[in-house]
Image (cartoon, rainbow, N blue to C red; front, side):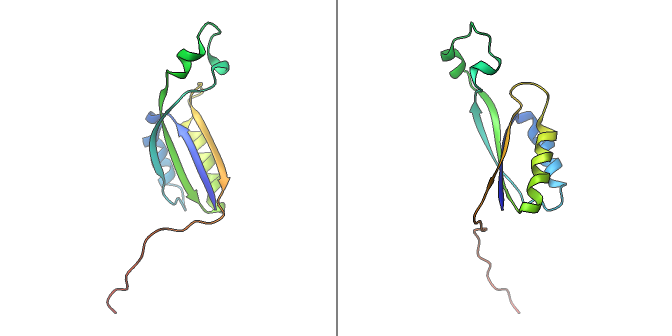
Length: 112
């Protein structure tokens, strides 16, 4: 099992959702609204103070998916393809190994 996490622009979420749902084996996802900033040295002019940058957070969306190994790479690729605009601040996607995962629900036996 793999966990795929992505931080993306909020306006990309509807398109990403549609693209992932169309992917065979897509297991579902959790979405959280977050805020963040990138490292000031990546794209901020030298005259901007670090204090200003660290207090100026940008709204983002965090997507979390736990998926079987055979689907994880396709999900990762779909996210990177759909979420990018070619500008700084598009986000970040990463995959980590999951040792064990299980759905938390209990089914009750139906009438026979």
